[in-house]
Amino acid sequence: MSVAAVRRPALRVYAVALTAYVAAVFHRSSLGVTGVDAADRFHINASALATFSVAQLAVYAAMQVPVGVLLDRFGSRRLLLTGGALMVAGQLCFAVATDVRLAVAGRVLVGLGDAMTFISVLRIVAFWFAGRRNPLLVQLTGTVGQLGAVLGAVPLVALLHHAGWTPAFLTAAALGATVLLLVLVAVRDTPHAEHAAAVAPDLATVRRQLAAAWAQPGTRLGLWTHFVTQFSGSVFALLWGYPFLVQGQGLSPTAAAFLLTLMTVATLVCGPVIAHLCARHPFRRSVVVFAITAATAAVWAVVLAWPGRAPHWLLVTLVVVLAMNGPGSVIGFDYARTFNPVHRIGSATGIVNVGGFVASILLILAVGVVLDLATPAGRSTPPLDAFRWAFAVQYLLWGLGAVQVLRYRNAARRRYAADRAAVPVPAAA
Image (cartoon, rainbow, N blue to C red; front, side, top):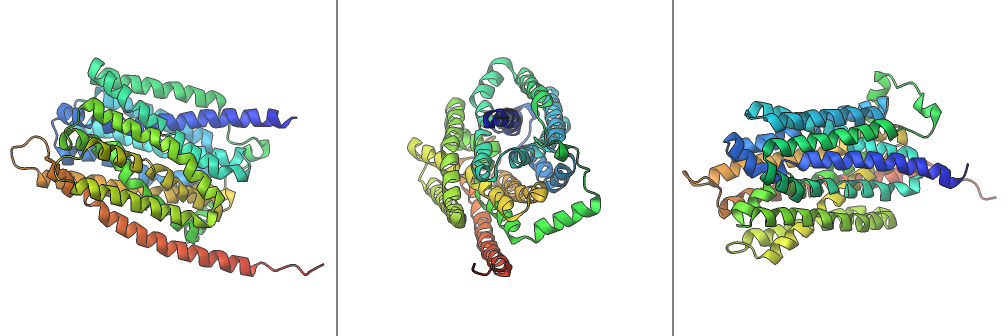
């Protein structure tokens, strides 16, 4: 069989799995540009609106380790199918909801299904492609997946304002159902029949693998890398960026959706660049992490300190810098891959994926609470100063994350040096 013949099935499986992740990002981000409409539909304030995203992200974060274990036991195909079905059900609930409880239940289902998607695609990459291609494909997965956020921005806003709430989210559910059928037809766990037929490990083995992944300093370095790089861009795209741009900065809904789309397009450009840097300089990945974190904190400082509303060029700069957050967080998964054997990739990746979403949950809640506290009584929308105080909370999370990345980078380097010293050097011939 030719190399091309072997490569075509791999590319087909990966393309469909990647499409499933694009759909998951679309479902995840669909609340971000509809937050203002959701507040009006359900007659809720900023703190209550935050519970929608918190419910979704809390389930996502809480399920990462269990999903990692399930992934090692049952494979990517089953989890992609289950996750896709749950997200379709969640969007159906959100489409018909007029009650806050049903709407929250819908976001919980979306978060549960989303939790099963990304790491399932990463496992497909690990099994279907050579190791030297993994860093680029992992970064490509995280980057191209953000096309889902493009679908969740301008097109969804246009459909929402043209057709209404229920038709817009019924369309989102139909899109998810179509992708689910593609996964059913095209995705397989592995190109090797013996691996596909392998008996799933027992629970004791799973617990040992999970403990071994956690004990590896490189896994925790990946977790804190994901924590410190992801939350600012994620929270901006998922919920609070749109209200900040419309209510705080006075942009039109179309202009705000355009900036969120620009953020996604910039992510598509940044991703390959960051992947190249990490592949070319694997021992300098933490330098990239610190650079992205510092740049994000610096641009936010200028935006928050600007007297009055920020000029458009500064808001464009902000979203372009925030676009680096997603690709930066993917470096955490590269740490999980390089410091763990392939049989516990699912567990290690699940641990890493908790980091950024825990940070995002904390920030979403904090922003909602501060906005309510800083909004004058009787005013229906938060003023710009309220948004300034709310987004200033980010600096606490950046400080914690940077300290932990530095700590576990040093620990991982010591572990790596010790492992290399323990390998006997063969005698000269």
